[in-house]
Length: 133
Image (tube, rainbow, N blue to C red):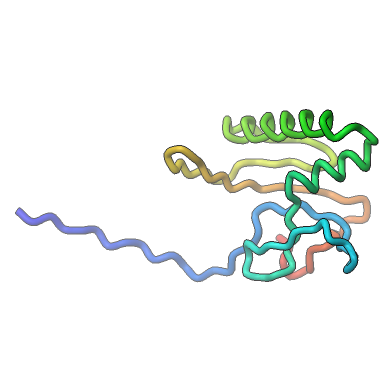
Protein backbone atom coordinates (compact mmCIF):
# COMPACT_ATOMS: atom_id res chain seq x y z
CA UNK A 1 0.00 0.00 0.00
CA UNK A 2 1.60 3.23 -1.16
CA UNK A 3 1.28 6.34 0.94
CA UNK A 4 0.66 9.65 -0.69
CA UNK A 5 2.83 12.56 0.24
CA UNK A 6 1.04 15.77 1.04
CA UNK A 7 2.12 18.70 -1.11
CA UNK A 8 4.13 21.32 0.73
CA UNK A 9 2.69 24.76 1.10
CA UNK A 10 4.62 27.40 -0.76
CA UNK A 11 5.60 30.46 1.21
CA UNK A 12 4.36 33.70 -0.23
CA UNK A 13 6.89 36.21 -1.47
CA UNK A 14 5.72 38.98 0.83
CA UNK A 15 8.33 41.51 1.78
CA UNK A 16 9.80 40.73 5.16
CA UNK A 17 9.55 43.47 7.75
CA UNK A 18 11.70 43.60 10.86
CA UNK A 19 9.85 42.26 13.86
CA UNK A 20 11.80 44.09 16.50
CA UNK A 21 14.28 46.89 16.23
CA UNK A 22 16.16 48.75 18.90
CA UNK A 23 16.55 52.22 17.53
CA UNK A 24 18.88 54.96 18.63
CA UNK A 25 20.22 58.08 17.02
CA UNK A 26 21.96 57.52 13.71
CA UNK A 27 25.63 56.75 14.34
CA UNK A 28 28.30 59.24 13.33
CA UNK A 29 30.68 58.10 10.61
CA UNK A 30 33.62 58.28 13.00
CA UNK A 31 32.11 55.90 15.57
CA UNK A 32 33.60 52.42 15.41
CA UNK A 33 31.62 50.74 18.20
CA UNK A 34 28.49 50.14 16.11
CA UNK A 35 28.00 46.78 14.41
CA UNK A 36 26.00 46.74 11.21
CA UNK A 37 24.04 43.67 10.17
CA UNK A 38 20.95 42.89 8.19
CA UNK A 39 17.89 40.76 8.75
CA UNK A 40 15.77 42.50 6.13
CA UNK A 41 18.09 42.52 3.15
CA UNK A 42 19.25 46.10 3.62
CA UNK A 43 22.66 47.01 4.95
CA UNK A 44 21.56 49.84 7.23
CA UNK A 45 20.17 47.89 10.21
CA UNK A 46 22.14 48.63 13.39
CA UNK A 47 22.70 45.76 15.81
CA UNK A 48 23.37 46.45 19.46
CA UNK A 49 25.69 43.74 20.78
CA UNK A 50 26.18 42.80 24.44
CA UNK A 51 29.56 44.52 24.62
CA UNK A 52 28.07 47.70 23.16
CA UNK A 53 25.20 47.51 25.64
CA UNK A 54 27.64 47.13 28.55
CA UNK A 55 29.61 50.16 27.34
CA UNK A 56 26.48 52.31 26.94
CA UNK A 57 25.17 51.38 30.39
CA UNK A 58 28.61 52.08 31.91
CA UNK A 59 28.66 55.50 30.22
CA UNK A 60 25.09 56.29 31.33
CA UNK A 61 25.54 55.21 34.95
CA UNK A 62 29.23 55.55 35.71
CA UNK A 63 29.17 52.05 37.21
CA UNK A 64 32.05 49.59 37.00
CA UNK A 65 32.09 47.15 34.09
CA UNK A 66 31.94 44.09 36.37
CA UNK A 67 28.77 45.41 38.08
CA UNK A 68 27.15 46.45 34.81
CA UNK A 69 27.88 43.07 33.23
CA UNK A 70 26.23 41.15 36.09
CA UNK A 71 23.15 43.36 36.12
CA UNK A 72 22.67 43.50 32.35
CA UNK A 73 23.14 39.74 31.93
CA UNK A 74 20.64 39.05 34.73
CA UNK A 75 18.18 41.50 33.17
CA UNK A 76 18.48 39.91 29.72
CA UNK A 77 17.95 36.44 31.25
CA UNK A 78 14.82 37.57 33.09
CA UNK A 79 13.45 39.21 29.92
CA UNK A 80 14.19 36.11 27.81
CA UNK A 81 12.66 33.76 30.38
CA UNK A 82 9.56 35.97 30.66
CA UNK A 83 9.04 36.03 26.90
CA UNK A 84 9.58 32.25 26.68
CA UNK A 85 6.95 31.79 29.38
CA UNK A 86 4.47 33.76 27.26
CA UNK A 87 4.46 36.87 29.43
CA UNK A 88 3.92 40.28 27.85
CA UNK A 89 6.39 43.01 28.73
CA UNK A 90 5.36 46.55 29.64
CA UNK A 91 8.70 48.25 30.20
CA UNK A 92 8.83 51.99 29.63
CA UNK A 93 10.76 53.49 27.90
CA UNK A 94 11.45 50.28 25.89
CA UNK A 95 7.75 49.77 25.21
CA UNK A 96 5.23 46.95 25.24
CA UNK A 97 6.39 43.60 23.87
CA UNK A 98 4.17 40.65 23.02
CA UNK A 99 5.05 37.25 21.59
CA UNK A 100 2.96 36.87 18.44
CA UNK A 101 4.38 33.59 17.14
CA UNK A 102 6.39 30.78 18.66
CA UNK A 103 8.23 27.86 17.07
CA UNK A 104 9.89 25.10 19.07
CA UNK A 105 13.16 23.93 17.51
CA UNK A 106 14.08 21.24 20.03
CA UNK A 107 16.91 22.75 22.06
CA UNK A 108 15.99 26.29 20.98
CA UNK A 109 12.92 28.30 20.11
CA UNK A 110 12.07 31.11 17.74
CA UNK A 111 9.90 33.90 19.09
CA UNK A 112 8.34 36.56 16.91
CA UNK A 113 7.87 39.62 19.07
CA UNK A 114 5.79 42.71 18.40
CA UNK A 115 7.22 45.76 20.13
CA UNK A 116 5.08 48.85 20.41
CA UNK A 117 6.92 52.06 21.30
CA UNK A 118 5.92 55.64 21.52
CA UNK A 119 8.17 58.66 21.36
CA UNK A 120 7.62 62.16 22.69
CA UNK A 121 7.13 63.58 19.19
CA UNK A 122 5.45 60.56 17.65
CA UNK A 123 8.09 60.12 14.93
CA UNK A 124 10.35 57.11 14.85
CA UNK A 125 14.02 58.03 14.60
CA UNK A 126 16.14 55.86 12.35
CA UNK A 127 13.24 54.09 10.61
CA UNK A 128 12.15 55.34 7.19
CA UNK A 129 8.40 55.91 6.91
CA UNK A 130 7.88 53.10 4.35
CA UNK A 131 9.08 50.46 6.87
CA UNK A 132 6.59 51.39 9.59
CA UNK A 133 3.45 49.49 10.50
